[in-house]
Length: 122
Image (cartoon, rainbow, N blue to C red; front, side, top):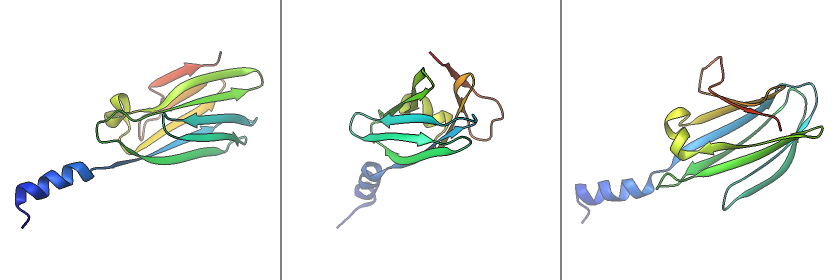
């Protein structure tokens, strides 16, 4: 027999926060992006001018999920945490948007018109 407390215990361990990350190239040149986590290498992809790259995942139960990306463009490069649970579970809990532009990479909270994170090209 399952009790209410057993049910609550089971539900906690089945928790999976789904997140979608989107990286938009707002430049008029293509860029190359390579994203990965400790466990998943998503490979290299070309984002065409004014195109986008996106992927989804579930945040792990203990809230340590981390995906990072490297973006390159004509000899310039930027590496950044595209999703870091400790930062983004409250910042962008279900959808995280990033733009690649002349400044580097910019992160936006949902529905924001201005970035809250800016990572310059190197």
